[in-house]
Length: 386
Image (tube, rainbow, N blue to C red; front, side, top):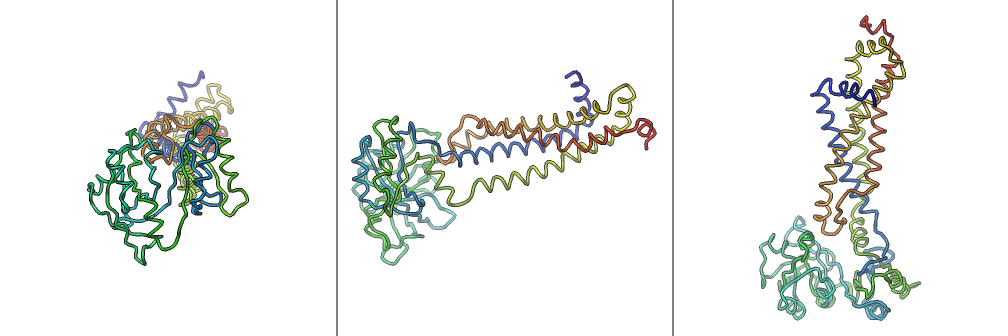
Protein backbone atom coordinates (compact mmCIF):
# COMPACT_ATOMS: atom_id res chain seq x y z
CA UNK A 1 0.00 0.00 0.00
CA UNK A 2 2.97 2.37 0.48
CA UNK A 3 3.28 2.74 -3.29
CA UNK A 4 -0.41 3.45 -3.87
CA UNK A 5 0.20 7.16 -4.43
CA UNK A 6 2.82 6.29 -7.05
CA UNK A 7 0.50 3.84 -8.82
CA UNK A 8 -2.31 6.41 -8.74
CA UNK A 9 -0.07 9.08 -10.25
CA UNK A 10 1.03 6.70 -13.03
CA UNK A 11 -2.57 5.73 -13.75
CA UNK A 12 -3.74 9.31 -14.25
CA UNK A 13 -0.62 10.55 -16.03
CA UNK A 14 -2.75 10.89 -19.18
CA UNK A 15 -6.15 11.77 -17.78
CA UNK A 16 -8.05 11.82 -21.06
CA UNK A 17 -6.84 8.38 -22.09
CA UNK A 18 -7.50 6.94 -18.64
CA UNK A 19 -10.99 8.49 -18.52
CA UNK A 20 -11.93 7.01 -21.89
CA UNK A 21 -10.57 3.61 -20.92
CA UNK A 22 -12.44 3.76 -17.62
CA UNK A 23 -15.64 4.58 -19.49
CA UNK A 24 -15.18 1.47 -21.61
CA UNK A 25 -14.57 -0.70 -18.54
CA UNK A 26 -17.60 0.79 -16.75
CA UNK A 27 -19.84 0.09 -19.74
CA UNK A 28 -18.57 -3.47 -20.11
CA UNK A 29 -19.13 -4.36 -16.47
CA UNK A 30 -22.49 -2.58 -16.33
CA UNK A 31 -23.58 -4.84 -19.21
CA UNK A 32 -22.12 -7.80 -17.36
CA UNK A 33 -24.10 -6.97 -14.21
CA UNK A 34 -27.37 -6.58 -16.12
CA UNK A 35 -26.94 -9.65 -18.31
CA UNK A 36 -25.67 -11.89 -15.52
CA UNK A 37 -28.71 -10.90 -13.44
CA UNK A 38 -30.89 -12.08 -16.32
CA UNK A 39 -28.92 -15.34 -16.51
CA UNK A 40 -29.20 -15.92 -12.76
CA UNK A 41 -32.93 -15.18 -12.83
CA UNK A 42 -33.55 -17.64 -15.66
CA UNK A 43 -31.53 -20.37 -13.95
CA UNK A 44 -32.97 -20.06 -10.46
CA UNK A 45 -36.42 -21.61 -10.38
CA UNK A 46 -35.94 -22.32 -6.72
CA UNK A 47 -37.62 -24.73 -4.32
CA UNK A 48 -41.39 -24.85 -3.84
CA UNK A 49 -40.90 -24.61 -0.07
CA UNK A 50 -42.75 -21.59 1.33
CA UNK A 51 -44.74 -20.92 -1.84
CA UNK A 52 -48.42 -20.12 -1.33
CA UNK A 53 -49.31 -20.81 -4.96
CA UNK A 54 -48.06 -23.52 -7.32
CA UNK A 55 -48.32 -24.07 -11.05
CA UNK A 56 -48.95 -27.62 -12.25
CA UNK A 57 -47.86 -28.23 -15.85
CA UNK A 58 -46.70 -31.13 -17.98
CA UNK A 59 -43.43 -32.72 -16.90
CA UNK A 60 -42.45 -33.30 -20.53
CA UNK A 61 -42.82 -29.81 -21.93
CA UNK A 62 -44.66 -26.59 -21.32
CA UNK A 63 -46.23 -27.02 -24.75
CA UNK A 64 -47.87 -30.33 -23.74
CA UNK A 65 -51.46 -30.08 -22.51
CA UNK A 66 -53.15 -31.74 -19.54
CA UNK A 67 -56.69 -33.19 -19.30
CA UNK A 68 -59.21 -30.95 -17.54
CA UNK A 69 -60.37 -33.93 -15.47
CA UNK A 70 -57.24 -33.52 -13.32
CA UNK A 71 -58.89 -30.46 -11.74
CA UNK A 72 -61.16 -32.46 -9.44
CA UNK A 73 -58.30 -34.72 -8.38
CA UNK A 74 -56.04 -31.75 -7.63
CA UNK A 75 -58.78 -30.04 -5.61
CA UNK A 76 -59.08 -33.22 -3.55
CA UNK A 77 -55.43 -33.22 -2.49
CA UNK A 78 -55.07 -32.32 1.23
CA UNK A 79 -53.63 -28.83 1.60
CA UNK A 80 -55.15 -27.46 -1.61
CA UNK A 81 -57.49 -24.56 -0.91
CA UNK A 82 -58.47 -23.68 -4.46
CA UNK A 83 -57.42 -24.41 -8.02
CA UNK A 84 -57.92 -22.80 -11.39
CA UNK A 85 -56.68 -23.51 -14.91
CA UNK A 86 -55.68 -21.82 -18.13
CA UNK A 87 -54.94 -22.67 -21.75
CA UNK A 88 -52.46 -20.75 -23.90
CA UNK A 89 -54.20 -19.13 -26.89
CA UNK A 90 -51.35 -17.35 -28.66
CA UNK A 91 -53.47 -15.04 -30.79
CA UNK A 92 -52.44 -11.68 -32.22
CA UNK A 93 -54.16 -8.32 -32.50
CA UNK A 94 -53.95 -6.78 -35.99
CA UNK A 95 -50.23 -7.45 -36.41
CA UNK A 96 -47.48 -9.65 -34.93
CA UNK A 97 -45.82 -6.50 -33.64
CA UNK A 98 -48.82 -6.05 -31.32
CA UNK A 99 -48.27 -9.43 -29.68
CA UNK A 100 -49.09 -9.75 -25.98
CA UNK A 101 -49.73 -12.79 -23.72
CA UNK A 102 -53.27 -14.12 -24.14
CA UNK A 103 -54.92 -17.28 -22.90
CA UNK A 104 -58.26 -18.75 -21.89
CA UNK A 105 -59.01 -19.11 -18.17
CA UNK A 106 -61.49 -20.61 -15.72
CA UNK A 107 -64.36 -18.51 -14.28
CA UNK A 108 -62.57 -18.25 -10.92
CA UNK A 109 -59.42 -16.70 -12.40
CA UNK A 110 -59.73 -13.43 -10.45
CA UNK A 111 -60.50 -15.31 -7.24
CA UNK A 112 -57.13 -17.05 -7.44
CA UNK A 113 -55.09 -14.15 -8.84
CA UNK A 114 -56.06 -11.72 -6.12
CA UNK A 115 -53.15 -9.43 -7.00
CA UNK A 116 -55.38 -8.10 -9.79
CA UNK A 117 -58.45 -5.98 -9.11
CA UNK A 118 -61.45 -5.00 -11.21
CA UNK A 119 -64.97 -3.71 -10.45
CA UNK A 120 -67.19 -6.55 -9.22
CA UNK A 121 -69.78 -5.97 -11.94
CA UNK A 122 -67.08 -6.32 -14.60
CA UNK A 123 -65.84 -9.55 -13.03
CA UNK A 124 -69.38 -10.93 -13.08
CA UNK A 125 -69.78 -9.86 -16.70
CA UNK A 126 -66.61 -11.76 -17.58
CA UNK A 127 -68.00 -14.92 -15.96
CA UNK A 128 -71.43 -14.64 -17.61
CA UNK A 129 -70.48 -13.51 -21.13
CA UNK A 130 -69.57 -16.36 -23.48
CA UNK A 131 -67.18 -14.35 -25.68
CA UNK A 132 -65.87 -12.13 -22.86
CA UNK A 133 -62.36 -10.78 -22.68
CA UNK A 134 -60.57 -9.22 -19.71
CA UNK A 135 -57.47 -7.09 -20.33
CA UNK A 136 -54.99 -5.27 -18.16
CA UNK A 137 -55.32 -1.53 -17.79
CA UNK A 138 -51.95 -0.86 -19.44
CA UNK A 139 -52.93 -2.91 -22.49
CA UNK A 140 -56.32 -1.20 -22.75
CA UNK A 141 -54.70 2.23 -22.62
CA UNK A 142 -52.11 1.23 -25.22
CA UNK A 143 -54.75 0.25 -27.77
CA UNK A 144 -57.47 2.67 -26.73
CA UNK A 145 -59.92 -0.07 -25.74
CA UNK A 146 -62.96 0.57 -23.54
CA UNK A 147 -65.66 -1.61 -22.02
CA UNK A 148 -68.04 -2.92 -24.69
CA UNK A 149 -65.49 -2.85 -27.53
CA UNK A 150 -64.99 -5.87 -29.77
CA UNK A 151 -61.39 -7.03 -29.92
CA UNK A 152 -60.74 -8.85 -33.23
CA UNK A 153 -58.14 -11.41 -32.16
CA UNK A 154 -56.53 -13.59 -34.83
CA UNK A 155 -55.57 -17.18 -34.03
CA UNK A 156 -52.07 -18.44 -34.81
CA UNK A 157 -52.60 -21.95 -33.42
CA UNK A 158 -56.30 -22.66 -32.89
CA UNK A 159 -58.75 -21.79 -35.71
CA UNK A 160 -62.49 -21.50 -35.09
CA UNK A 161 -64.89 -23.01 -37.65
CA UNK A 162 -62.09 -23.03 -40.20
CA UNK A 163 -61.32 -19.33 -39.65
CA UNK A 164 -58.65 -17.51 -37.64
CA UNK A 165 -61.13 -14.85 -36.51
CA UNK A 166 -61.85 -14.76 -32.78
CA UNK A 167 -63.88 -11.61 -32.00
CA UNK A 168 -64.02 -11.02 -28.24
CA UNK A 169 -66.17 -8.60 -26.25
CA UNK A 170 -64.26 -6.49 -23.72
CA UNK A 171 -66.16 -6.82 -20.42
CA UNK A 172 -63.40 -6.31 -17.87
CA UNK A 173 -60.39 -4.07 -17.37
CA UNK A 174 -58.22 -5.10 -14.43
CA UNK A 175 -55.11 -3.59 -12.88
CA UNK A 176 -52.34 -4.78 -10.60
CA UNK A 177 -52.77 -3.74 -6.97
CA UNK A 178 -49.00 -3.39 -6.64
CA UNK A 179 -48.01 -0.73 -9.18
CA UNK A 180 -44.50 -2.20 -9.28
CA UNK A 181 -46.13 -5.07 -11.18
CA UNK A 182 -47.91 -2.88 -13.72
CA UNK A 183 -46.04 -4.71 -16.48
CA UNK A 184 -48.30 -7.70 -15.83
CA UNK A 185 -51.26 -5.67 -17.12
CA UNK A 186 -50.13 -6.28 -20.71
CA UNK A 187 -52.19 -9.43 -21.10
CA UNK A 188 -55.62 -10.61 -22.25
CA UNK A 189 -57.70 -13.48 -20.92
CA UNK A 190 -60.84 -15.06 -22.39
CA UNK A 191 -63.30 -17.71 -21.20
CA UNK A 192 -61.91 -21.24 -21.39
CA UNK A 193 -65.36 -22.74 -21.96
CA UNK A 194 -65.80 -20.64 -25.12
CA UNK A 195 -62.31 -21.51 -26.35
CA UNK A 196 -62.84 -25.22 -25.64
CA UNK A 197 -66.19 -25.29 -27.39
CA UNK A 198 -65.26 -23.19 -30.42
CA UNK A 199 -61.71 -24.21 -31.40
CA UNK A 200 -61.33 -26.84 -34.11
CA UNK A 201 -58.44 -28.92 -32.79
CA UNK A 202 -58.37 -29.58 -29.07
CA UNK A 203 -61.01 -30.41 -26.46
CA UNK A 204 -61.03 -30.76 -22.67
CA UNK A 205 -57.37 -29.80 -22.39
CA UNK A 206 -55.54 -27.07 -20.45
CA UNK A 207 -51.96 -25.83 -20.41
CA UNK A 208 -51.59 -25.57 -16.64
CA UNK A 209 -53.38 -25.52 -13.29
CA UNK A 210 -52.72 -22.91 -10.61
CA UNK A 211 -53.11 -24.15 -7.05
CA UNK A 212 -53.62 -22.05 -3.92
CA UNK A 213 -52.35 -23.73 -0.75
CA UNK A 214 -53.76 -23.72 2.78
CA UNK A 215 -50.28 -23.63 4.31
CA UNK A 216 -47.14 -22.51 2.41
CA UNK A 217 -45.06 -24.61 4.81
CA UNK A 218 -46.58 -27.73 3.25
CA UNK A 219 -45.89 -26.68 -0.34
CA UNK A 220 -43.34 -29.45 -0.96
CA UNK A 221 -45.64 -32.21 0.32
CA UNK A 222 -48.61 -30.89 -1.66
CA UNK A 223 -46.52 -30.64 -4.82
CA UNK A 224 -45.41 -34.27 -4.46
CA UNK A 225 -48.99 -35.41 -3.83
CA UNK A 226 -50.26 -33.59 -6.92
CA UNK A 227 -47.52 -35.02 -9.15
CA UNK A 228 -48.27 -38.50 -7.79
CA UNK A 229 -51.80 -38.26 -9.23
CA UNK A 230 -50.52 -38.69 -12.78
CA UNK A 231 -47.35 -40.67 -12.15
CA UNK A 232 -46.62 -43.26 -14.88
CA UNK A 233 -49.38 -41.86 -17.09
CA UNK A 234 -49.16 -40.18 -20.48
CA UNK A 235 -49.67 -36.78 -18.80
CA UNK A 236 -47.24 -36.69 -15.89
CA UNK A 237 -47.10 -33.32 -14.16
CA UNK A 238 -44.49 -31.10 -12.56
CA UNK A 239 -45.56 -28.75 -9.76
CA UNK A 240 -43.36 -25.69 -9.38
CA UNK A 241 -43.33 -22.09 -8.22
CA UNK A 242 -44.85 -19.45 -10.46
CA UNK A 243 -41.48 -17.80 -11.07
CA UNK A 244 -39.96 -21.14 -12.15
CA UNK A 245 -42.90 -21.74 -14.49
CA UNK A 246 -42.62 -18.26 -16.04
CA UNK A 247 -38.89 -18.72 -16.54
CA UNK A 248 -39.42 -22.11 -18.19
CA UNK A 249 -42.02 -20.52 -20.45
CA UNK A 250 -39.56 -17.84 -21.56
CA UNK A 251 -36.76 -20.37 -22.08
CA UNK A 252 -38.73 -22.12 -24.81
CA UNK A 253 -38.09 -19.10 -27.05
CA UNK A 254 -34.30 -19.00 -26.58
CA UNK A 255 -31.35 -20.32 -24.56
CA UNK A 256 -30.90 -17.30 -22.32
CA UNK A 257 -27.66 -18.55 -20.77
CA UNK A 258 -26.01 -19.14 -24.15
CA UNK A 259 -27.07 -15.74 -25.47
CA UNK A 260 -25.76 -13.94 -22.38
CA UNK A 261 -22.46 -15.87 -22.46
CA UNK A 262 -21.93 -15.10 -26.14
CA UNK A 263 -22.60 -11.38 -25.71
CA UNK A 264 -20.36 -11.06 -22.67
CA UNK A 265 -17.59 -13.05 -24.37
CA UNK A 266 -17.57 -10.55 -27.24
CA UNK A 267 -17.69 -7.57 -24.86
CA UNK A 268 -14.80 -8.78 -22.68
CA UNK A 269 -12.68 -9.81 -25.68
CA UNK A 270 -12.99 -6.26 -26.99
CA UNK A 271 -12.28 -4.87 -23.52
CA UNK A 272 -9.06 -6.91 -23.21
CA UNK A 273 -7.80 -5.57 -26.55
CA UNK A 274 -8.68 -1.99 -25.67
CA UNK A 275 -7.28 -2.01 -22.14
CA UNK A 276 -4.21 -3.97 -23.21
CA UNK A 277 -3.43 -1.34 -25.84
CA UNK A 278 -3.85 1.42 -23.25
CA UNK A 279 -1.43 -0.24 -20.82
CA UNK A 280 1.12 -1.00 -23.55
CA UNK A 281 1.10 2.61 -24.69
CA UNK A 282 1.34 3.90 -21.12
CA UNK A 283 4.44 1.79 -20.45
CA UNK A 284 6.10 2.82 -23.75
CA UNK A 285 5.69 6.48 -22.81
CA UNK A 286 7.23 5.93 -19.37
CA UNK A 287 10.33 3.93 -20.27
CA UNK A 288 12.75 6.67 -19.03
CA UNK A 289 10.72 7.04 -15.81
CA UNK A 290 10.80 3.32 -15.17
CA UNK A 291 14.55 3.31 -15.75
CA UNK A 292 14.86 6.14 -13.23
CA UNK A 293 12.94 4.07 -10.67
CA UNK A 294 15.39 1.22 -11.17
CA UNK A 295 18.27 3.68 -10.78
CA UNK A 296 16.79 4.76 -7.45
CA UNK A 297 16.80 1.19 -6.21
CA UNK A 298 13.52 -0.35 -7.35
CA UNK A 299 14.06 -4.00 -8.21
CA UNK A 300 12.83 -5.69 -11.38
CA UNK A 301 10.14 -7.41 -9.30
CA UNK A 302 9.02 -4.07 -7.82
CA UNK A 303 8.66 -2.49 -11.27
CA UNK A 304 6.75 -5.56 -12.47
CA UNK A 305 4.40 -5.26 -9.48
CA UNK A 306 3.84 -1.53 -10.01
CA UNK A 307 2.73 -1.97 -13.63
CA UNK A 308 0.52 -4.97 -12.80
CA UNK A 309 -1.03 -3.06 -9.88
CA UNK A 310 -1.74 -0.11 -12.16
CA UNK A 311 -3.49 -2.39 -14.66
CA UNK A 312 -5.56 -4.16 -12.00
CA UNK A 313 -6.51 -0.85 -10.36
CA UNK A 314 -7.71 0.55 -13.68
CA UNK A 315 -10.01 -2.43 -14.31
CA UNK A 316 -11.15 -2.61 -10.67
CA UNK A 317 -12.15 1.06 -10.63
CA UNK A 318 -14.18 0.78 -13.81
CA UNK A 319 -15.58 -2.65 -12.94
CA UNK A 320 -16.87 -1.70 -9.49
CA UNK A 321 -18.46 1.47 -10.86
CA UNK A 322 -20.03 -0.51 -13.72
CA UNK A 323 -21.51 -3.23 -11.52
CA UNK A 324 -22.60 -0.55 -9.07
CA UNK A 325 -24.61 1.11 -11.84
CA UNK A 326 -26.08 -2.27 -12.77
CA UNK A 327 -27.22 -2.80 -9.18
CA UNK A 328 -29.24 0.41 -9.46
CA UNK A 329 -30.82 -0.63 -12.77
CA UNK A 330 -31.58 -4.28 -11.92
CA UNK A 331 -34.55 -3.62 -9.55
CA UNK A 332 -36.28 -1.58 -12.26
CA UNK A 333 -35.50 -4.32 -14.79
CA UNK A 334 -37.10 -6.92 -12.52
CA UNK A 335 -40.25 -4.84 -12.11
CA UNK A 336 -40.54 -4.23 -15.84
CA UNK A 337 -40.21 -7.92 -16.68
CA UNK A 338 -43.80 -8.69 -15.76
CA UNK A 339 -42.73 -11.37 -13.29
CA UNK A 340 -40.22 -13.15 -15.57
CA UNK A 341 -37.40 -11.94 -13.35
CA UNK A 342 -37.57 -11.53 -9.61
CA UNK A 343 -37.95 -7.89 -8.58
CA UNK A 344 -34.49 -7.87 -6.98
CA UNK A 345 -33.48 -5.15 -4.57
CA UNK A 346 -29.79 -5.80 -5.23
CA UNK A 347 -27.45 -7.72 -7.49
CA UNK A 348 -27.00 -11.39 -6.65
CA UNK A 349 -23.86 -12.02 -4.53
CA UNK A 350 -22.62 -14.48 -7.17
CA UNK A 351 -22.71 -11.73 -9.80
CA UNK A 352 -20.47 -9.56 -7.63
CA UNK A 353 -18.09 -12.48 -6.95
CA UNK A 354 -17.83 -13.44 -10.62
CA UNK A 355 -17.44 -9.78 -11.55
CA UNK A 356 -14.59 -9.22 -9.08
CA UNK A 357 -12.85 -12.38 -10.31
CA UNK A 358 -13.16 -11.14 -13.91
CA UNK A 359 -11.77 -7.73 -12.95
CA UNK A 360 -8.69 -9.28 -11.36
CA UNK A 361 -8.20 -11.71 -14.25
CA UNK A 362 -8.57 -9.05 -16.95
CA UNK A 363 -6.33 -6.65 -15.04
CA UNK A 364 -3.58 -9.23 -14.77
CA UNK A 365 -3.93 -10.38 -18.39
CA UNK A 366 -3.79 -6.92 -19.95
CA UNK A 367 -0.97 -5.79 -17.66
CA UNK A 368 1.25 -8.85 -17.93
CA UNK A 369 3.08 -8.12 -21.21
CA UNK A 370 3.69 -4.41 -20.46
CA UNK A 371 4.84 -5.38 -16.95
CA UNK A 372 7.27 -7.97 -18.29
CA UNK A 373 8.66 -5.39 -20.69
CA UNK A 374 9.14 -2.96 -17.80
CA UNK A 375 10.81 -5.69 -15.74
CA UNK A 376 13.32 -6.49 -18.50
CA UNK A 377 14.34 -2.85 -19.09
CA UNK A 378 18.07 -2.15 -18.96
CA UNK A 379 18.78 1.16 -17.26
CA UNK A 380 21.48 2.30 -19.71
CA UNK A 381 19.46 1.36 -22.81
CA UNK A 382 16.27 2.95 -21.47
CA UNK A 383 17.92 6.25 -20.52
CA UNK A 384 19.71 6.30 -23.89
CA UNK A 385 16.40 5.92 -25.69
CA UNK A 386 17.28 2.53 -27.12
